[in-house]
Amino acid sequence: MSDQSWYVDHPEVIVVTTPKIACDGGGGALGHPKVWYDMSEEDFVECKYCDRVYALKGGSHDPGKTAAK
Ligand SMILES: [Zn+2]
Image (cartoon, rainbow, N blue to C red):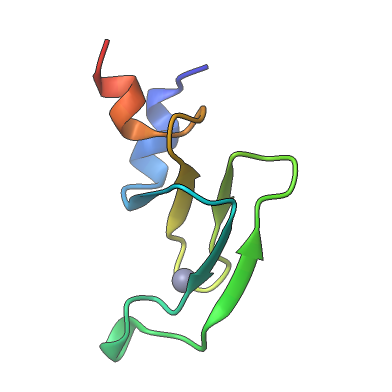
């Protein structure tokens, strides 16, 4: 399922290959304490601190998959 408005709300999507990821906001002024996320049954996770979205490669929220039609 591809919802274009979802990508407008979440401009920063980082494609990852593992369901367990760590986010620190990229460091610097926009950084935050490092937190770990596990997607569990989902194929993406949104960071509660910096609103970055980590999408599993090839999953429903992989922007590369959406673009390559
Ligand atoms: Zn973050």
